Amino acid sequence: MVTLDDPTADDGHRQQWIHHPAGPDAVGIPVLYLLHGLPGNPRSLIGDMAPKLDREMCRTGLPFVVAVPDGQEGDLDTEWGDDAAGRFDLETFVTGPVIDATEGGARRAADLRAIGGVSMGGYGATVLALRHPDLYAQVASFGGYYHPDDRDGVFAADAAAHAPDQIVSAANGKQRFFLAEGEREDTPLQDGSIRGEADRFAAILTQRSVTVSVVHPPGGHDDSTWDPAIPPCVDFLGSGWRAGQ
Image (cartoon, rainbow, N blue to C red; front, side):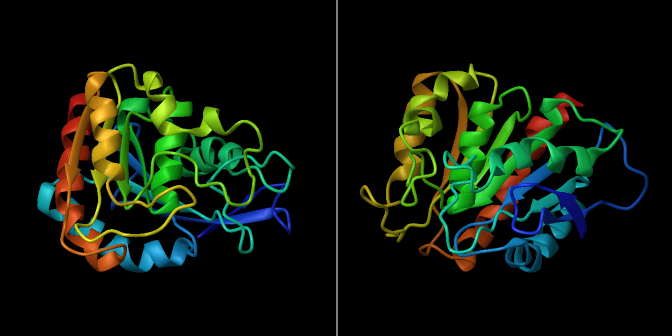
């Protein structure tokens, strides 16, 4: 765990967990950035996903760095954005200090970076990748949604600029997306629910010749549902990373 400066955080700092595979770091080792949901925190992802990702590294023979930043802001639904009212700047934090702390002097090319997350983190990963296509070539969303669910007014009148289904042209046929949604997903949103979001967004991506893979594991909106999607997710990311090496 490392402590990073963030002047918009309550105490001026945020925590980030970074897992490096054995051996020295290098520019050719891929990085997966993971964003937690709401309610959620880095420990919830570290405790559940990290051991499974380790096993996948052993299975595939492809080591990668895993970085999990803290995006908590009390009980606010941050949408992993920069708040219009100045309460937090999480987009700036994730796309700046988080990458700097994780990669240091071994700065990766976008082809060797992926960003993923669960629930709100799945939304956040998708929108940040589309808003910063120069930083991330791949996205992995577990139980995510693809339009803002901005209950706390983070984006104010600028919601369209944070709507993945409206800014997909940024992918430009170069980004790759892995979307996992449980067969019994029924989590409500302010507008509709998460049910059907993966297929809806995949259709939009496909129309624009963007590579996308969708899986529907048994279950609803929880870790036990998303766990079976981890191996195919790592296979998907691995195919993209190997192409970028």
